[in-house]
Length: 184
Ligand code: AR6
Image (tube, rainbow, N blue to C red; front, side, top):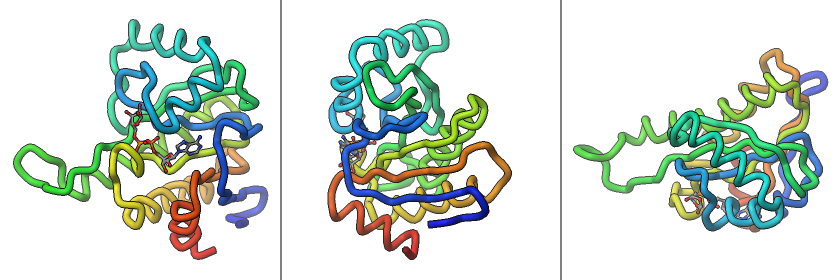
């Protein structure tokens, strides 16, 4: 889907670890020590260099807050870099201890925006995202997909060096939610 001259949004069903792009984005957790889901798949396929850089980052800056992003090498992956971001854990019951729905949405949106800002700062042109927070972090797909698509479209519509953003969605249900959200 063309957003403007030289700016494209692409939706694919597939495995993000196979993408040959400037950067793939990892749905990590604040410890940056790896985990399950897409995080586990990226560390397995990318080899130990990625974890070494994550450890060095945490030793220097501390844990990565929700909604923020940092970058490492792509290690053995076809992608040159991995941008690690931390999505919000979705909470059904809101109030007292929890974040409001709006706050959760802002944090999810921030994951996409901060990752793309980092990519632009580094002069990276092609970036691939998974569906952040909709696995272990339980964000409902029908709420997360429109937030993700809007954040990326808004970014691409502004002047930036990033030319192509791909959503690489792991199953049909997720792919279809993003197709609906993009009105594609
Ligand atoms: N390529 C693309 N998408 C994938 C892949 C893959 N190889 N593998 C899984 N997905 P999740 P979260 C999809 O749970 O909800 C980790 O343990 C998956 O089907 O990976 O943000 C971290 O360490 C789903 O659509 O991430 C954190 O602790 C999407 O990726 C926590 O999980 C996100 O699911 C983060 O949870």
